Amino acid sequence: MTTKKVVTAVGSSTAVASAASAPSGTGGSNAGTATASPPSSLALGTKEPKGFRLKLQQMVAGLSAVIPDSTSIPTLQAGTLTKADMVSQLTQGLTQYAAVDDAEITLTQARASLTGDLPALKAYYDQVKEALKLFFGKNSLMLAKFGLVVAKPKAPLTPEQQLAANARNKQTRGLRHTAGPKQKAQVQFQGQVAVTATVSGTPSTVAPATAPAQDSAPVASPPGK
Image 1 (cartoon, rainbow, N blue to C red):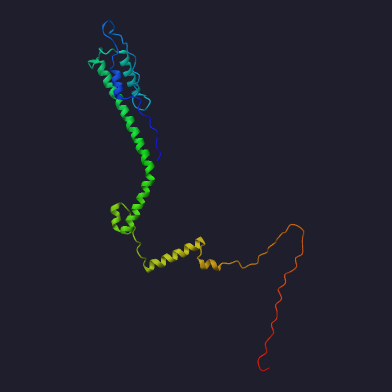
Image 2 (spheres, rainbow, N blue to C red; image 1 turned 60 degrees about the vertical axis):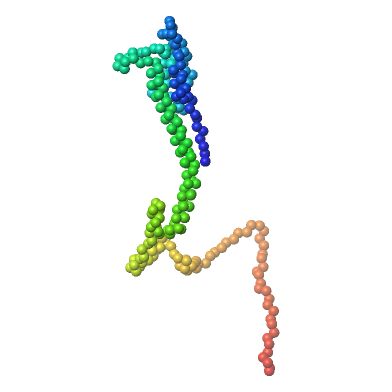
């Protein structure tokens, strides 16, 4: 089974939340000026952020780096927004994106595992299927309870149907120019074959072969002569 290398998440929701809620300004005369640096890591999940996810990440980074902790920003419709509320709500969105990344990684690993196990699983299924056919019989109706197709026996042909089938088979064999073993054995070439051989080198005369001489046995005379 093949395994795939999976990249783990760069950050976590806890790390982002703690980084976003860290003090980013001081009180007194410097209350309106942010002094904290941007969080070291606001990337959640394993994918490169883009689209709205990237906007969320950039917004959380800006709130953490620029807005002091004690700041409340008024809005036209939603009332007053505190820094803690804004960072918390936006960070929850990043956490949901990271959860989707984790789910996709788990799904990819599960699919890879299943793909590697399928050949052995199918082979074992075939073994179970054959065992059930041997146990119940290949024509048993009980096989349908296991999701197996029951082999239906062919109905015997009537004499008229058998004659028609034989006639169709004979016509088919004629169209295909096929023949049985006995018919093939009767087909032989009956003509004469002319063979011409060419031999390289010095021609030589070969004496015709003579038949070996046979010893003549004495003929026995009948008794009494």
